[in-house]
Image (cartoon, rainbow, N blue to C red):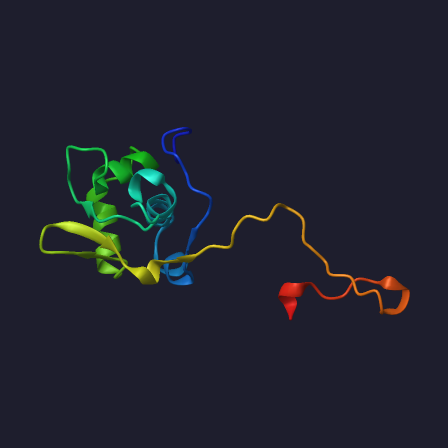
Length: 133
């Protein structure tokens, strides 16, 4: 479980793919979700950064797992992500979150659904939503 206030989150610009939702355990999914939504683990373009596996600094994989849940073993999560092809380890020992793990999210538009109205319809009843076309 994520500690409140532990990381500045961005406005849902990324979301997990069905592949991640299907393949990973709940704990591993939460780690990936945190990686794509926490400003600390994103670069200047809001892309997930390369993470050193073990780093004394704040922006390593061990730190990421600790932000999600201190009870999780980083090695177990790392092995699951690597085994299932969600991350790659480069020559310098950093982890790269594969692009197949996340997709652009829909921008937040509030809680209401917009319904287009057509003045020429009978009784001025609402039409299909614009995104249903």
